[in-house]
Image (tube, rainbow over all chains, first blue to last red; front, side, top):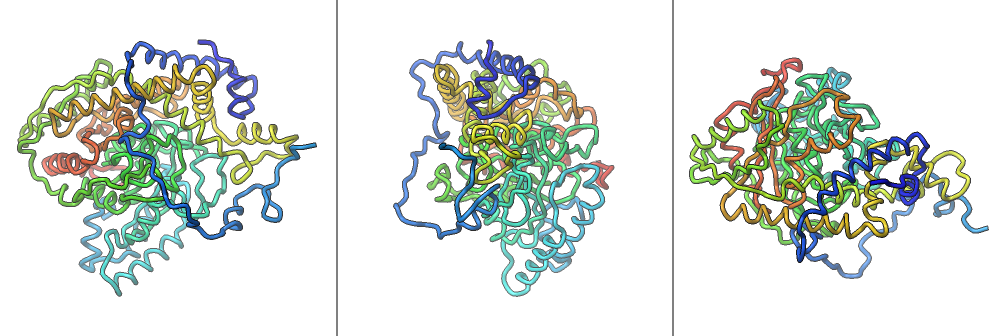
Length: 92
Length: 489
């Protein structure tokens, strides 16, 4: 299978050099070629697994459970100002 | 002493023959002496380790000892800890300090354990050899030209060389059991939903599970008892999981009446002949101990690796989208705009294997391919699970080799990702089905350790612990340790 590696990389928001794209292309084709054996398995009427033990997604009461830890939670951020995350300008 | 089991150290602490500070000092000295050679630890703070040990000795003098009082336990770099960095062995998390402890870290602290440091791993747990780590490869104490397995390779090497008596790992497709096997130690992947995933950096959320790597079956049980239990902050943690008596399960002396399934799909051409012979000999031993070996078939085994390499990368590509260089993680210098910031930060921060898996997953989930790949793989997953359910109508536990081959040389498989993926063929189905699996030493191939894998029904860790404990008691494979690091091989 031929894969447009640059397109998939853009979907993944990863810049790839031409060199990396050339390396990954055949590797991904190889991996997906192996995976294609799944097409031969008869799965008619078989439900897909979501949780291995079929556990239902639990709900909790809609109440505040944690305190305000903004400063601690923002400590690892690359750039913040006045409690906000700073990114390059998005709107002109 | 260094190669003692956790429970032996516990006995010595309880009887006053040693102190937590003495124990911590011994292992810190061994880390100082041997870590350069093995690269098993990527972060260690001796002063902080000793402070915890002192606090434990003080606690013991004033209260009844807690279940893991004063016992050193290392943790894989994938567990968020407020103390020290948590980097998942990736440049994208370089110098990241977590603002909270993972649930299992809180549990270990509450149980009185002394946390020794962070162990090496494949970047984001993606690998089977520990060679994708941003901090360089870790080495196998039995032969330092060989890989220690992965992704929990640092935890495995640290326990095998007695730089710590026990460690935590995580297992998404075999990442506890395979490194345990190739370094000659015992590792347990609990049933999916048994141990909270909160604060464990996510790889593939429907497969990830944390568990112990240790020198004995009982040690693995002691640690799992301490870290398991429902956590309302992890939506996949199962609230009504059946309780088991972890320590009583390890007292088994024989296997009278035990029905052990031997799946023909796990004894195949192409596997190492000595690995096969060791596992066959182990099954013979089990028969001597009173077990009945039943030939069974798990027909969808051949599709498990393919399903896994759709499901795991798909979930990884979604999970790793959070590394956007906004709230945490590496940000590139002087981004032109938002898109440039995302794409360049992620290019610089992620290593090749992580990129490969994100791309594979993004492709499988992309418009027009979802049904053919992800949905199909999740259906095949159901078939894999049904195989096990049917098998467990005939047998109590299943025994297989953990890995088809012993540890291979560093660099031997790095050129071909698919060949590397196939080294997990005997461990992956257990994750797909969410079952408990344990690997324990059962011999040597080419002078390198071989692992015997036990698989149990969901929530029946007690069944595999009992079988493993009986086998361990009747053989001396778990006592072997690498001579180059002071053990008796």
